[in-house]
Length: 227
Ligand SMILES: *Cc1c(COP(=O)(O)O)cnc(C)c1O
Image 1 (cartoon, rainbow, N blue to C red):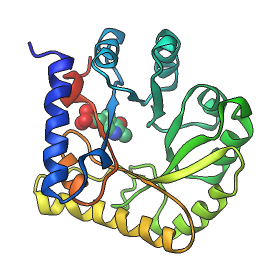
Image 2 (cartoon, rainbow, N blue to C red; image 1 turned 90 degrees about the vertical axis):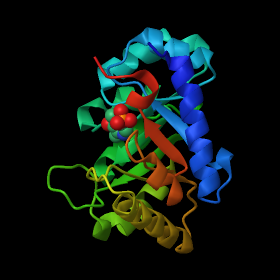
Image 3 (tube, rainbow, N blue to C red; image 1 turned 120 degrees about the vertical axis):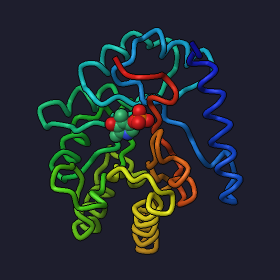
Image 4 (spheres, rainbow, N blue to C red; image 1 turned 30 degrees about the vertical axis):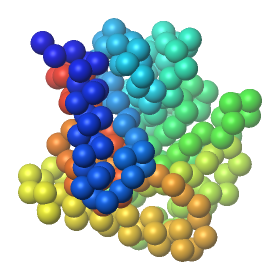
């Protein structure tokens, strides 16, 4: 069986290849290794292979892994749906939250973020396909939420995130990612400073990189199937 170290080397090459094909600098695309439902041993293997950024969807599971890897200097990203009764532990333990879709949650995180840790990095999750089953704000509400979040003292608004509906065709996959890129550009021309487009997963990272992804969130292609 191919291990995590080999998978990371393969993915890293594929990300570089996609970036070069897209005419972008390979170091502009960062790998967020999504470790939800993966054992600690695989996270440690990935860390030993040089992987720094990890993504978790479930608060309790993430907290346990963070506690067990304190000495490794890893960067932890919360990428799941965040309930308001769990914001405190997230503010106290994670480095990033990618899934902000309402002001109340952002306000709580800002208030609960220990100042000693520096600002919590956030991305706003956009429901690009306008799917009723999915989290994320509508495009219409984005400018107001972005402006309000950028004013919160203990948060650093880094960019936008999306989780589009699965599509198999490459040019179809690019459409929602292109939309996210345009939305980020509009906010930037309105004066907000943002450097992150969190988009693309195991099945569509190449399309995301072609549309400007700076952080691709990849789980199964790094760690294998989830338990
Ligand atoms: C699980 C998950 C991923 C990774 O998905 P893979 O298909 O395993 O690469 C990325 N982003 C989010 C928000 C996820 O929940």
